[in-house]
Image (cartoon, rainbow, N blue to C red):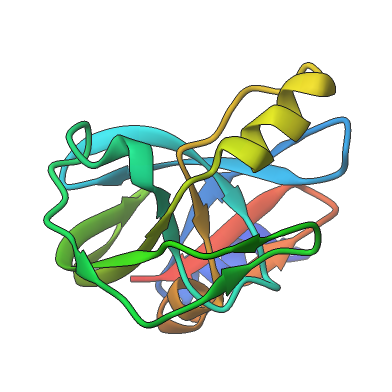
Length: 147
């Protein structure tokens, strides 16, 4: 019997999370920060996991000044903050001490709105993907993280 990729990864201690592919070929993913759910973009090119600076209260984030200058392909965001020791959960995978870069995501959400795509409250970046030993199955639109 042929073993599928999904069952092989499950047997290796991975958990599977469904990804929603948008019309712009970005992936959106549900995750929670401090037990509060939100919608995030999965971005392998983002070095840090980020949350919207405007969502501090929603996610119960304690912020401090940051020297990090965040930038995207379209913009440089001057004001950033950092929030340390947060609980980040994606499916069954949990990071109990996640640091998040905080910046205003309005320019990203405005671009998504123009394409009639649901707004996001953050970005899951390479730091989280590396910590979770992530595997992305582009054929099945799934993210696998090692438990």
